[in-house]
Amino acid sequence: MNVLALTLLPALALASPPPSARRVSALLIPMDQGAEARGVKLETYMNEGLEQFSGFTVRKPEELFGMPPDDEAKASLQRGSQGLSASVKAYEANDYEDAERKLRAALKELQAGAGVMGACKELCEATALYAAVLYRRGDVEEARLHLIDLMALNPTFELSPKRYSKEFISLRAQVATSRSAMLRGSAMVKSQPSGARVYVDGEFQGYTPMTVSTLQVGKHLLRLERPGFRQHGQIMEVSPDDVEVTAELSPTTAYKKYDAQLDTVAGEIIKTAPSPAASALGKALGVDRGVLGTVKALGPQGTELVVGFFDLQSGKKLAGRRVVLQGDEFGQEKAEIGRLVNALVSTALSGGSPKQKASDPLENRQGTEDWNGENPGGQRSVSEKKPRKGDPLDGVNGTEDW
Image 1 (cartoon, rainbow, N blue to C red):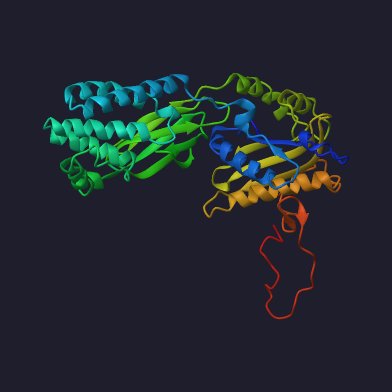
Image 2 (cartoon, rainbow, N blue to C red):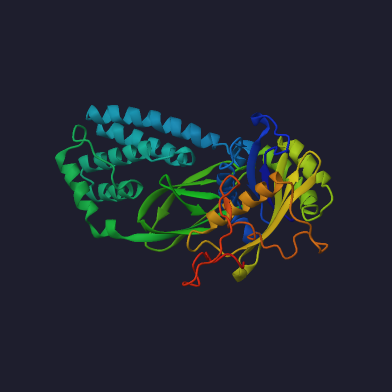
């Protein structure tokens, strides 16, 4: 199925509607697998650009389609937390055999609850306590291995001297400076569909597919999030040899209904005539106007983004742009997308684009012609000035001839 880039914007009719009607959301769906990985990242930048316009209520894709947690993981986390509390009581009562038995069950449940963990609080506490139990019974090497896992999950996790002996805390310090603790590995993280946000130990890393490098050897919390899909989480075991993790994401019912409309909308995006499919999509999602577009991977040439700003009540296109994104090596893509959103909305508010001589309304339009004079929110801030004599580059910012 051909897919597209879609950004939904609020009602922007010239007779300004009430603020409650100004709803906005960015939804990006690539046309091919190569562009699919870029979708969520670009839609995030578009949402941030839309937030610059006063009177807009930005509805993020996760609000429209949901991004529910894994119910089974949630239940596992609850059971694991209860098991940890029981284990602590047994440990503090010096019943180490009972504590070990309960901790094994608690660790299993907590690891299964990785998908709903923002941080490893309970898992780290259970890992530390289990290492302490092993140390108490004289299994020092096993205790070392679990301390390595603990430091991989959270290098700064503190061992309370009220609960743990000085000898065990000293062992943790020894392990922290050992050769094993210095080992690093990488993990290739993939998902179906791609473009999911990747969190490792609660820290955002990027979007799938991606390689997370220089991770400490041991266990790590992995969580994947993609709007319209159930959250996914698991324990990722990193070794000196590179590892690969692939997750199959489950779509929500709302996303399935939305996805079923995209084929028809894709065929009407570049047309100048009103789009019935765009109007139907707007009604289904509860928005009044929107930016609909296609995203296509061009290989080394970058990513093509063709967008049109539509009145989703009538299906009429109010503005259009075509841009080719060259990647994000220097962190410039966020600003580029922000300017694109700004140009589209500003053009729509000002009554539309100038008439085109060619039959294709987007021909010879690269999307950057009007960007230099726009601030976020559509306010023009640059006026024409005569160049001064002297420096031939004075007053030139490098985008005039794009």
